[in-house]
Image 1 (cartoon, rainbow, N blue to C red):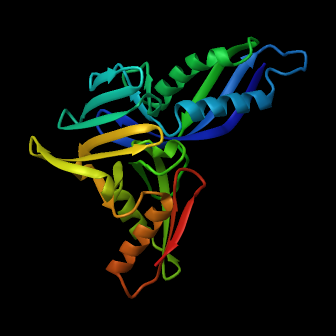
Image 2: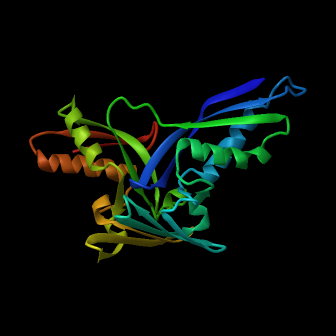
Image 3: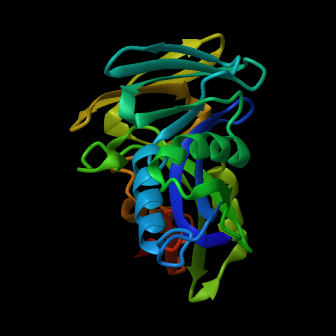
Length: 283
């Protein structure tokens, strides 16, 4: 017998890609469980499935930096509390360095991060968390279907009390822009193209800049409740704003930027942070 839960939850995270570098991502998680019926006539109680899997995904993947620990792009140092890694990408043209508390980075047994490789790793970890009556677990991750434009961004929110304080977590998001109450697809496309695989950094978190092999690098660092965080990546893959990078500030930044470039028009920006949530700003 099979039990399924479609779109059980979604995870917002970032990962390191051999070509793209630091990528913010959002996936929907669905699961199928195969096993014998218990005394209740169930493969597994839906409440147990939802609670167990959601909590585990929240603790393990959501708002973390996911890294394929067997990738040749990775150089890794780890002790009981800190992970310090270096990642070469785009044919070794660029390098990313990240130093974070252990819980902020999830190392998976794979050579590359894909929905399939992450699902395979997760299934192995989940086997001991579900009842013995479960014979087989099928877990799938998929992106949200987005008809219009989308962008991938990463950020860190040092003032956040939860896992958003991690310096390299992210989202795949869409955006709706209205100019004088009319939907403006061209401006939506422009912002999504500009912010494809971007790190949105807060200026006060920018500690230094350095030219390495003819590439300008930004070094971000801050101390938060979970510990000390540091991230270095190419400046051309960053976008600096004067505020924290909450979705509220991001939406207002876009609205203000649009207004500055076209003062005769009024703008409304509906910016998403992952799936089904976000902020609306006006200028």
